Amino acid sequence: MKTFVTKLKDIERKWYLIDASGLVLGRLATRVANLLRGKGKVYYTPNLDTGDFVIIVNAKKVKLTGKKLQQKTSFSHSGYPGGTRFIKYDKIMATRPEWAVRKAVKGMLPHNKLSDKLIDKLKVYKGSEHDHAAQKPERIEIK
Image (cartoon, rainbow, N blue to C red; front, side, top):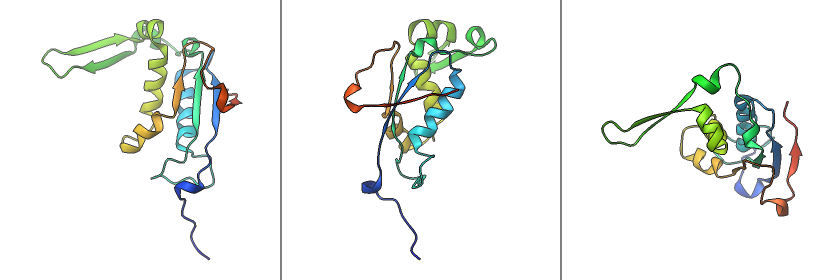
């Protein structure tokens, strides 16, 4: 009996559509990260990109539980002295909710070169319209 090794030609990619309205940000991010990695597939391999494409619509309707909306902050540094910036999530969710969803998903992916390829397969939209109707995405319900 030979050991099966997944090759790039064996990988089948699908497109999934997720409506994020009313979903909790962290729970959404874990499910999307698993789809992007391909962890539910039989031929999953940790060192290959075996995952699918994911489209998230209605990112502006994502919920944060507890007092995270007022207390949670995003940290960034410009690289210059005194270049730290802390932005509260209530401001982020009001202006750029798709960035917050993308950042949450990226934080749940492995922190290596593979995550750059994986995050490119994530498409996030603020409203309910998206540009990927030609790919015929399959709708997924996340609870």
